[in-house]
Length: 206
Image (cartoon, rainbow, N blue to C red; front, side):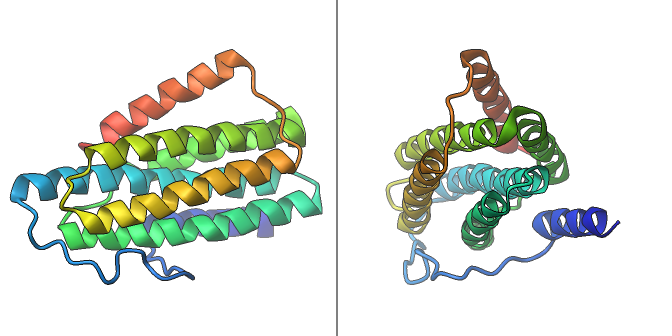
């Protein structure tokens, strides 16, 4: 029961609570008041997608920490989750600055990511679970690079946040690789790309 309530508490905090970063916000000293309304709207939509990605990251790491019996791997997932909390706080702050809202479907995104992470960890084993992390982080890194190209050039604050997030995701992938990740089967990778495409398309609007 303790595990159940702790898991539920983590989910509720991720989806509904205000988050606080341990590291300074990369955008904290950057002013972007020169954005047009159209630029502000587009930047808000893109940062909403990035925020959803961080909600999903929390779900993935929480579920994989729950699934593994390896204490060192549990610690690895929890440390990565703590670092991802910075991203969650930064994207929340940027959404507020842009006058945009988080996705209305965040509970659904969290539940879906949690289920995928738990299945990967429980039935695939630790090496496959880490491989899932590697592929997820690589796809997120590529997605953030695309956002760097789509964000308004004048939105230096959002660009600073996305740039730091991209560096962190690359490090998380490298850490998981060193921890013993194995490559995922190609059909699984393609299914992950398809799911990510649905998520980003829907979250851009809702």
